[in-house]
Length: 317
Length: 287
Image 1 (cartoon, chains in turn cyan, red):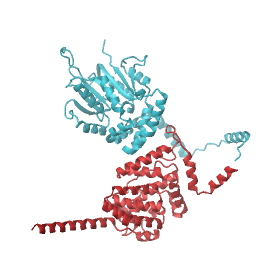
Image 2 (cartoon, chains in turn green, cyan; image 1 turned 60 degrees about the vertical axis):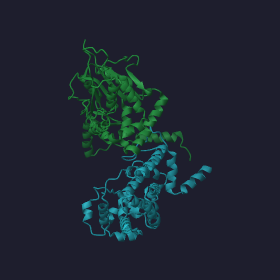
Image 3 (tube, rainbow over the protein chains, first blue to last red; image 1 turned 45 degrees about the vertical axis):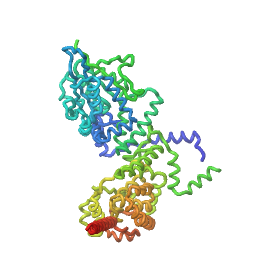
């Protein structure tokens, strides 16, 4: 096979460029195009790597989580190779929920905390919070409200709670709510607001952060555990290949649903970096412990695979 | 000179083999997948395909109810050579070519069960709906093909998957594991898809009586009929619905196997009668 000379190649290319046909537009095409332009004006957001109208994202995410609810825990274990348990344990321990009653309590000391766990459907964080408060801080009255937008996840959580001691106690309650609209929760009523691996699925993260600011008491703590950007390039290469190769595969084999897990890894990819998200937390009004300058506004776990963002609602005066 | 001789030899090989060599050479990173060739297409590289094949083989053996894994196994093992061979089989027959041109789909929308029930006795359509009712299943929408790169071959796989219930009706084999394995053996002899051959490993899950029935009767029937009959992938089912089913069987060169449900019922009744006799004799002895 002989290779064409440079002259023949460029001549062929030039001929192609000059031979531009007149665009043909049929009658129905004009109407269709006009309709498509109108649709594109609607606000769009990202659903993994797809771009969808903002109104549609909630139902698409809902479908994902209804599908993964029953195999959620098994899949979490397999996808993270059991490390998600370490992350969640560290997250809860570092928050130290519960009031540690000292031998000489002062009269004004609060006796119990109200903790709100957002997107906490299956109860992973809620059970850890209650367990830490009860066993470590000897606090038997702090309570946790678990909120999730998806009823299938809540049902799964209620089922799992039957195996704990808090199944029918007042310390654990379940609310179906959208984190962007917590009208059923009074302002300034929550001591600790936690969201673990949920915020990347929200359509409007700033709205959720502002709602968090509203429901928290002054001095209350906002804590978010979420996947984030890995700094080390070698670890990042391996992590990305695991995410995009192995995770949808495990989803197909174990849960029978490749698409949902493809969405999950894409949504991790699209989530803002640690610095950007810390900026958003600050913009909502929270104070960042450690401050942004020395990269203290967040805590990286396992090289940045997950990150804990904490913020405190300032007290008046 | 050497390379032209090799390329001539390559061009003399059948089309399916040529395609295999080209496809094996292509590999890509999971971070940089090529664009899909059709709606629902998920391009996999060689390692992913191997992992899906191995994983779904093991998981579907542990849980044969996971139809989606059997489908994934079929798609990932069909790709070098076998699905191209099946597509060429379709292209070699006039009816097969028409099916590939028309691309009909068998779903619960396109196959109206009420219309089929109204058909005359012993027609293909009636036998199909009788089988569906007897087994308590519906022409439910099968999973769409995802892992086959060539669009036409993806359709061939989809057509095979959707015709599977018609093969059940044609042979009369029931829907539980024993009948399915016998039908898979027949399909292996007829279509040569690797997944059908691998499904025969499900004999390890069968009870000893079922297994001996399989080795003695159903496997020989499956292999001999699968090999001697015409290619069932080329049957245009939508056109054959009103036809007499024995006529179709004769045309394909296919014999029905012994009715598996009747056999099992007869064996069960035989065992029950033997047990009652034993108990009666035992009662007599006690006196």
